[in-house]
Length: 289
Length: 222
Image: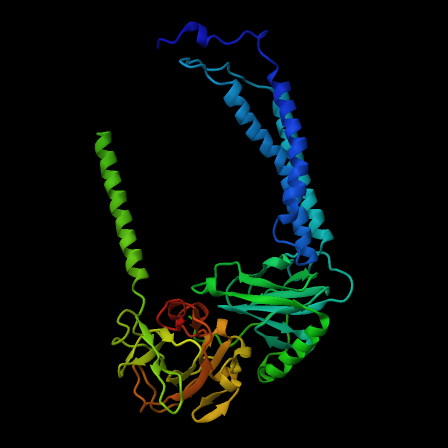
């Protein structure tokens, strides 16, 4: 309690610099420099890459989010640093700053800016989802928008603990491998035979829940030859962590050869498969309680 | 007074933490022991695994869950409950499964086709087949990462001498399934049954289907 009175004295208004202007200017300059740098340097390397039109769209979306988040981050960080430097309590002082009660301008500014940010992101997200036909996500059995032109339907069937894939336009053949032709719009019909799973083809930017008795549709157009990972992203039991696989994107010619090979290889299984359906109610279930 | 209360609470929390830790450690280390495949007879190079599937494991090999469906493995002249098998890399593994359980049926009929074995076939009761009726399946032996799927047909419901409890003697009604597969590089692969055979559990997928040592385990390729 022996602090010197001079150290604890607040500066007189006349001596105080205009913190708002100084801080605002610092933030503005930092934002004008950092935001383009973030977009140009970080943007292209954001996930999930450019394995499909949908994945590329997600990279764009992530870049937009990052660009909008950068000024907010800078606001917080610069204010923190500014406060540490300029609003530091003098050594030995134990005075509180003056209480601020009610500042309509500050409150209004805060509410307007945060509301504008959130609403603009909501608007952007909604537009992107509609414009990009679900943007690689599962859109339920009746998607709001459907891409025009020919589509290759592929059914993704999840069960504990493996994915299998059925190609209805190729005799309904089912195979444990997912192979897709490049530059072809694919209509994925994701369903489950037992519990809730989730089909996640990371490099293609596709993620769709696999629910029993639900046909969850997702659209994807692979744009380059590649191998991609397939994982279950819904905790589904003891072997959830083993429920992964690799898919391939091949040329249309290679796809034709591959699907023909699958039809021959799995002819015996195809004979006993139920007719292609958007969902299945497997029987029997008598062993279950 | 406050210090005393704090001490009591701290000790209670610590005791609870230790108890939980011990329980988890016990659970994590109670995995059935690893069983190595035996060398195959000189006439067929490689290694052999002899298994049986039983509708109820029995008190002898599964005191905790005697009524759970289970795989058993033959080692040292007796049947033990383990699903952690070790096989040699880059070799042929001959598997014989004595199947004593009744049919349940496959949720996905696609798995009724034999896949990933040598010749893409299996021998069932002496007959070579590449698929079975999916409704007759009782279990499967499947190693998804190696592309191996073998459906195991069930003993007909009207069998006169069914095995009630494991280990089952070969004199009782059963099906004999044999097949061979080639191993590749070293690795640890999970294997499982794809038939929802956990009687009494939701859609048959609980209990022995979700517990190591019954209807799933590991193939250690060494």
